[in-house]
Length: 616
Image (cartoon, rainbow, N blue to C red; front, side):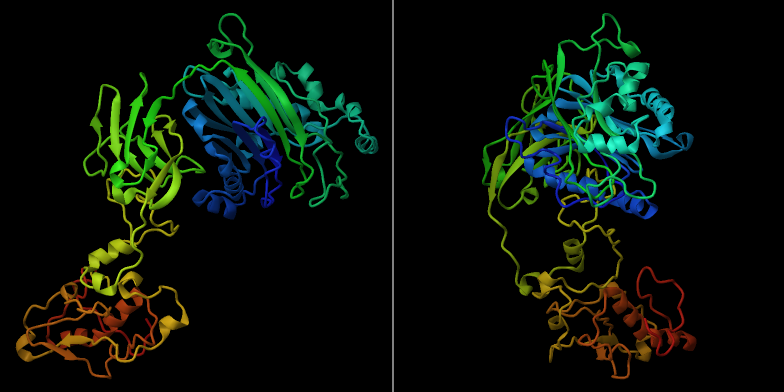
């Protein structure tokens, strides 16, 4: 299935199931879906957001297609021009040599509002290229469209000897907002022909139909009959053609064409030999979808049946796994690589839920080759058979259907998958009593809330175990940082509800500071990081002790007035309150007494005390 849609910077609709022809039955069930979009919102604020997160259109198509077992194979974007290619998960090992390219043609080649983006790949050994273009607009720009298309074909080059140029591929699908218009005919006659359903009288005046027979660059490109109304230009939100003052003439601007490489004798274009075997393409459907009104263009879809002799009978990597994992020790994966497969030490085996969206959408993974510090075990079973094992903490708990996939870093694709299998592991006990965690160290509490990668981590994604999906950047660890015990330790909710701010009578933590006896002033003070932990695990203030023993702060001290029942402070604010309370001790420097360093990040000199009444 091939889809093209100029979305006119609009937000995605709620559902695109009918556009993708997903409910047509088993006989017409697609294996590969290519989606070309034009004029996706690419203003600076949107581009910054899309650079950090997946754009909304791609998210929509992944959400809709993943329940039908489609996985995103590759995607490429050039400003508002996006191309996505999806395939059934069991075809992924036979889709190799995936590459992308883009060519700008706007503003003399410096701007990407116009141009072309492409994804090429080997499908069962046959080279196929998908090319999504957005060509110049307006009736009089036909020659400019021709030149831009020729530029795109010339500029886009791929690595490898199989097919270096676009036209060197065995099969090319060319689609997009090609912007070809209807010549000569008056707008009133065009609308009359549309209303009377005599579209054939408009075909011979279509610029693209004329160009097929006159432009050498279009030799061999085929297109199905235009049995649907022109797809441009509509009033947004309606099925009415342009009613504005410009009153643009309706036109078939959105098109889908294909070209089969000519099986000529000898070397083909670019010095490449034509593929062995017969490849045939028949178009089953070519239609527009009038039900979508978010743009001034209507989307166009085409369904093709591509027949060829398969050149790849076995995947590059074969994976063997038990039908069910009911115990952690059963999480053993055996795999065998085909001869000639280029293995990398960065290859990994991912565990996916059935219905995963893209190759990085895994639950957990193990490296396909063991290195120091990695939690996977690998041993040689035979000359070509290997084995790895998932650790118990990496396995999902509960019941579900999963798939294993071998990800090749060299080809940036999945080189082997399994059939779905069951995982039935008992869920871990939810919650724990406060007494079980009262003796844990502050470092252990940090690990329970922050997941930080080691400097030499080779994780293929930001989260190593993917326990936390927060998009916020990770916090750095600072020695001496005081953290409130986690909700698991306190047995209470982290939600900032009114209940969490109620007073707890009789449970105010006692705050101690060392006595300032003359005989102890010259002694070396202990670092705050060495303060004794509260045995009950409920106090989040530090306690500093010296030889003279602890003493309670007087009520006029600012720290004593910091009643935790009245302060819903974050750790950083609590640190400032401690710093403010120690201000008086810093003033002792002026009297000749040595000062204390509150933390390793504090300056070695003694700072001045904060101003009275100043707010942190």
